[in-house]
Structure formats: structure tokens, C-alpha cells
Amino acid sequence: MVKQLTGIENKPTQPLRGLANELYDGNIEALDNAINQFFQLVAANFRPLSDSCTQPPLDHFRSEFFIDRMTVELKLSRVRIHKAPGPDGVPNWNLRDFCTELPGPICAIFNAPISEGFIALRWEESNVIPVPKTKPARSTESDLRPISLARRL
Image (cartoon, rainbow, N blue to C red):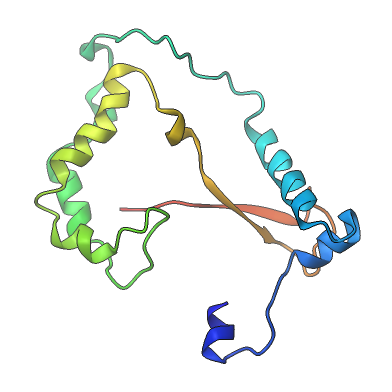
């Protein structure tokens, strides 16, 4: 879309339109549902987390699972500001420029689930984009690669 808007490419590209036409008579929503169902099969055998977790004692967990303020501050100070922001939309310069103020809240957010033994449902979600391995894609099972958007510090 950026290439189209900037005039680098004149035609819009929709790599999955052909797959939708071939398998689902052009119904892109049916293709979306099939892709989602296929990608969800990866975690089908995982045991779901219990909503009634009791809080385990802190000494039950080794310290290697917790993140500390200094590590977070160091990582934030090295964020590349010219890279695109992650799915949260927070500009990278915000993370770098406020690297001394953010480690406390970030540590609290990431260490709480470890100490409480409970992970929020929102953290179990991801933003997965199907990227074709071959052109044109002919199958949702073998021709699509799931790419998950995530922020790396």
C-alpha cells in the first residue's frame, strides 16, 4: 500500500486474493476463517491456563525468570528509533527517550504474572499475518507462513 501511495507501484497487490478465488469462490472472509483455524491448530494440544490460580510463594520461582530495572533500562536505551513501532503503536523514540522512567512499570507488568502464576488472556493473543510462501498460494496448509508481530527490545 505504501508503494502504491508513493507511486512506486501502480497496481495494488493482494497475494491472497487468488487463493480466495480458487478455494472459496472469492469469499475473502471464508479464507480468513480457514487461515485462522489452521494457525490455531498449532496450540490445539496445549492445556489452557486455569482461572483459579492460587498465588504461589515468590521463592518458588528462580530469579532468572524475573527481569530487573537495569536490564530493561539498557534495552530501552538501545531501541532503534528509525524502525517501525510494534503493534502497540508506541513510537520507538518514546521508549528510548524515557528509558530511565519506564523500567519500573515495565518490570512490574512483566514480573507480576510470574509471581502470581497467572497470565492475562490478552497476553495469550497475537497479531498473526499470513504471508504466502509461494506465488500464487494454492493452499492454506502448505503455502502460508504465519508471521506474528511482536516488539523486540
